[in-house]
Length: 111
Image (cartoon, rainbow, N blue to C red; front, side, top):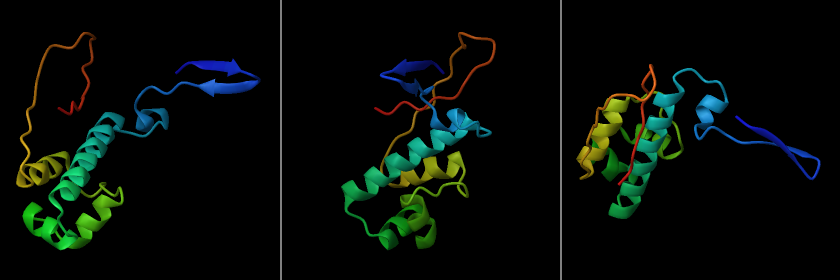
């Protein structure tokens, strides 16, 4: 991260991953999960589903839907979140390619 001083105020540019900036473990996975939850939230709104309807459609409980829509996704795996999106009528493509660096990374691209 880059630090600059502008008008006497120290500004620190983020990395693009707030979870990494906060030094949280598994920051790449957290970023992907949060992106999936954002897409699920958009889908539920676009489809005009109630939490009960969304829960039935996604195959999870209404309290889990409520928690998810409020940003709580720690109890749900990436695979389960992808399954939820599939059940809401979304396709998911996974692309694997050689990394430009010795250690690869995870990335979520939304079309």
